[in-house]
Length: 634
Image (cartoon, rainbow, N blue to C red; front, top):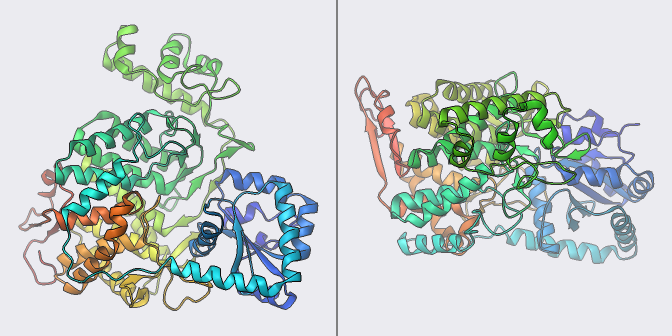
């Protein structure tokens, strides 16, 4: 038995294609049927690498009695949040307003016209069954009450996108930036780094902001807190000590226990962060993280066409983290008796790394210097033994049953990967890093742009879903970055074309900001202006910075003024909640402190970039040409 999801391409939707629930994909036809049958709609949203999505599927969606309740009383829609971030945003906002929190799986109930009336996250089977009965009965008895509540909820969701218009001539002040900095560091864990206690997310743009603030304000604490966080993450279980790459978050304060799914967007941004930190510190640990993370992405996520897939699942064989954990006997048998004690001590086996069922999540438990002294080894000898042992462990691990792979290719996430690879190339000058970034660009141009328009997702040989603001913003950013790395003029001209398209098709003229979906898309009950920076920077903050740089390169005051207007409107948010507006705060650094325009001319204008890239100069924009011409300021 299969349901309508069997015809989809999303791995997450296909996971649910054999459920007894009559799932169907998001479509106008599903809502038309809901209106015809006068049924509420269940919108269940998740993604393929989500552990608790799998748990709820096993407990409820594979249960015949629960499925009968859902099928009898509701139209049931499954949504891949990565394919449809616009749908996810709408119902996530509903959940935040109603229960004060969000997460996945996200399970929402909506009227036949798509307006939400209730939303929550994971429900155990008994609670879910009770909720199904309660909401269905309530709607049949008092449908007008549900419609009134939907009106209020939609009004609340729309209010979340309201932006106060600032005074046009407010100056950009260093005091505001300092308040933002102080607010952010107040949240930092002074022992283990990161924000707060648990769970802990990497949040790369928080630390990029602190690196940039250190560079401009010469604030040593900003650097120290950032390096503490980077050290603890790289040494912890959230980082894959054998294969490289980071898990999505840690469930504990010490970065020891990961939520084992691995996402492209996290790793792409963390490459940028660690490469920039290396440029400041020249710390080998950070270089190793960059190289190992890129190797992980190439080994585990790279498609044959040269772009990157989305994610690896948290589970294998139905057990979270099984692919990644080790016991002491396995280490001994794989590494060998000679070096087994050294490697077990380095990784904290059966001590710091011990997790559950006598299994260990590998982490760096002992400083290299301590073990070199204890085992009478030189640094080169120790590093050779470590690399050989990690190689053996990786080879053994590759024989295990692997976590599921989400083989969607998303344009926005691949744009982040381009940026990460380009930053790594600037710092380390590895030709393969530049080559990989260019391969992604070629793939996007060949497969995800049609008639000049971007597409959000690609799978099974075809693009699908028109591009969202995040696709345009992040891809434009990658084109500007590529231009500043190579002075490849067609890239900056394409960035200009796409900026103009966004201005024409995504603008909210009342606020000067941009809708997440285009102005012609009225599919959802409420449109969204996304301004807060979360695990991925908000598309509006990215667009503001794009406009700032393009305004300088093209000497276009319209771009510059639009960017400054957006930034002014966000200053209260930056000051009060810098952790969630850190990409905006980076832009504010550009406006508060000196910002330099550097132009290269002459026959060797590209070669001269190499020396400049050895210096940490984030508050700059670069341009280059053999001869100064009019189209760019260079």
